[in-house]
Length: 220
Ligand SMILES: Cc1cc2nc3c(=O)[nH]c(=O)nc-3n(C[C@H](O)[C@H](O)[C@H](O)COP(=O)(O)O)c2cc1C
Picture 1 (spheres, helix red, strand yellow):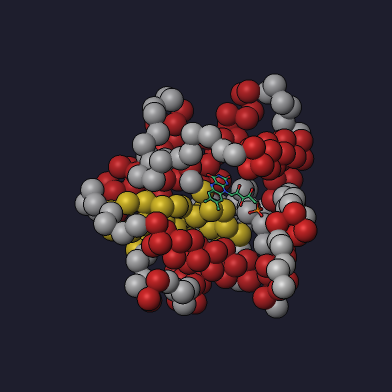
Picture 2 (spheres, rainbow, N blue to C red):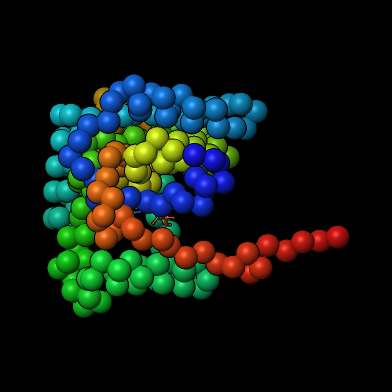
């Protein structure tokens, strides 16, 4: 796939097939993705790939916590509020998503089920978790963002889908337990990754973007 085609056609996938992705393919994707730039080539990222029993443990633990309404405690707090423009973009994206998959505005039960599916990796067998050592700062998180985008694009180019998910790091103690990590390892994001249902409604959403003219200003 040409890079521009990949950039223009990648979307988040949220309905995966119960089919494994080979370790070889995950390694191929990660090997290329780790070419991401980072501050002075500091390479702050650490990566845990969850499969098999580890995935089962994480999925069940996260799902139970969320279902019981346990308070989230992400290592990097989720924002409490957003500026108007971002609030609007997020509201419209959510509205379009639920309209697209036919879940009504007042259908709290279905919305909750959809939200809880996050914790089950949207049925994927594999998730990739990105974490860093706690003394690293904001610039290292930016570096990890570049790595994450590479992973999303490399997955797309390989014919598999991925969804970057803050939800997957909402209860990071579960992840530290699953991967045997010390408290000073801090989770940035999880990525569900795998073969996906091509005809599933949720996987055919193309989210909008603000117009280029609204975002970009040229100066001579
Ligand atoms: C930092 C970050 C966190 C995200 N967290 C979630 C999440 O927890 N659950 C989810 O379904 N999607 C999540 N997403 C995916 C976004 O909703 C998605 O990228 C956005 O709506 C644009 O859609 P697209 O990826 O299909 O272009 C996240 C994306 C990013 C970059």
